[in-house]
Each structure stands twice: as C-alpha cells, then as structure tokens.
Length: 198
Image 1 (cartoon, helix red, strand yellow):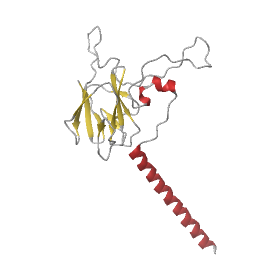
Image 2 (cartoon, rainbow, N blue to C red):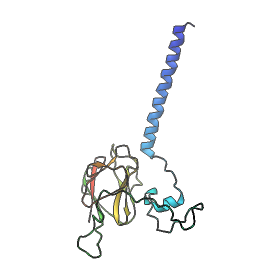
Image 3 (cartoon, rainbow, N blue to C red):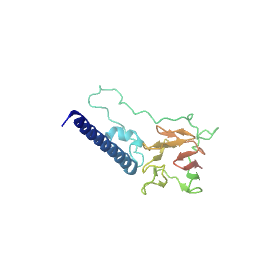
Image 4 (spheres, rainbow, N blue to C red):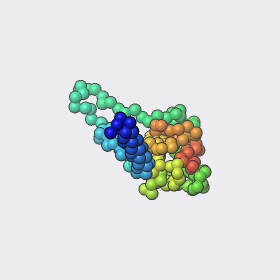
C-alpha cells in the first residue's frame, strides 16, 4: 500500500466518523426536543425554597434547618426570589390600605390556531407545550414538548421557560429566568400568543 492509498483510507475513515458524529448530534437534538431534558433532582432544602424546581404545586413554607456545620446562632442561607422586571406590587390596586391583589384568573389566547380559547387559572402551575400531559397544549412546529410553565409566586403569576428550543417571549422580550407576568401582557410561545386577564 503506497502513501497516497493510506492517506485516502485515513480520509475515508475520518469522513465516516464525522458523518456518524453528525447523525448522533441530530438524534440527540430530536430526542431532547421530543422528550425534554432530564431534570436534576435538587437537594430537599433547595427544592422546598423554590417552586420552580418541580411542576407540582408550590411547597408549603416551613423553617429551613441550618446546615450541621454552621455556627450556632447563624441564619441559614436563603435562595433569592425569582427576578421581576415590575415594580413591587405592580398588580395591586392603588390607594387601598389592604393592597388588594389583582391576580389574573383566566388565560386568553389572542392569536394562533386556538385563538379565542380561555383557560381558567387556579393556584396550581400550568405546563405549556406539545405534550398531551400539558395544562395548555400547543401543537405547532415551534413549540417544544415541555416548553414553559406558569405558576404563582407570592400571589403573582410567573412565566418560566423550560429550556425550549425557540424560546418564550414576554412583551417581545425573551424570557431567560422566571419572570413576573403583568396583566394583559402578551406571552408568545411558538405561533401562539396569550395574555393573563382578570
């Protein structure tokens, strides 16, 4: 076997390897989009502190025990609250001494294949995506299986993107962290837009 034949053989194997890596990459991307990414289980203290760790209802507030190696009398570290781009109490009635909460009680689809559909909001989180297990099922090519989640946090609705492929947009801005949703503000997922209303 002369050097030119050896070079050609090495190039063929290299090209074949590159082709298989590309195929595995495509299969992995499709699997992630169809079945979602694996969710890492958080430690119990962290899971209790954050309602964004699971799709279940927010955990009841309970005192967090300090770490065993913490000095006596020191406070345990707390997880910071979710980010909000609204001023404090943006969805509260102005001028009321009790600060009545104006929490949305319905979700209204304003554009897309299911335009005009309304969904009553309770206190449980709502998962949005192509999966038939979702509280709001949106079936289009731009929506992931488990795309986003709506949930209550301190009587305010928050939107959380679940590492979707095409993103979740609140008032035209992409949501990267759990973000507070003002009333009557458009949320866009795939080709569907909806708002939270009273």
